[in-house]
Length: 247
Image 1: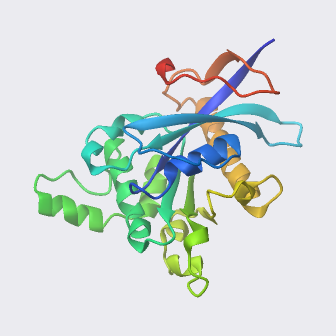
Image 2: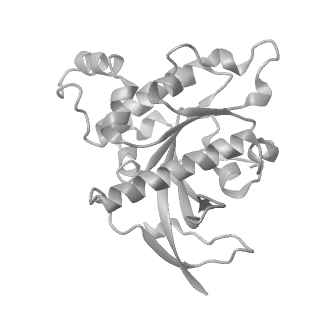
């Protein structure tokens, strides 16, 4: 039976090696990825999510998870994946403080690629662009891009017991600045976001916010990315076939 299912696109960004591919696979399939490879450009996985589950408004949605490669070699080309994003998952490595502080740069990059650089005029020199980036305010990003954000810290299993992951989040941290929830997890443990856990609830709530924002934009006539309807054959008992060539 053919069922019409809407979709939203969420991009996962963060430094190379933080575990975005493992995280994407865990979210989409509920299974750990034993031998992840390096992402060149972008890889896509899809999760079927029940929007507002348990309410009269419940409706299935496809969550397209765009795992964007973090290599500096592709910095100038990966902006193409930002254009139609409906939500953002910022990923950092709990054992690498630099990967956490770099999340500001990722937001800055997304904002600039989206053409929403409204807080400062475009400048020409490297030094001036660096100053703009240092003065970048994530709260201003949220106001300009109007996209829900979730912060996820990986490799929780590698954090020393004496150094709790909460030390990564300082006052005024990226999650607080964006008004975003934060999840710390071990991508090698499927139980990390198993149904019913606190983190699974946070993730589901984030997906609902992304869907709700897109529906509001469409109803208000602000959505410009084309149709959000995706027609395909879908079997609840098996995996959903998906092909990157559709894009």
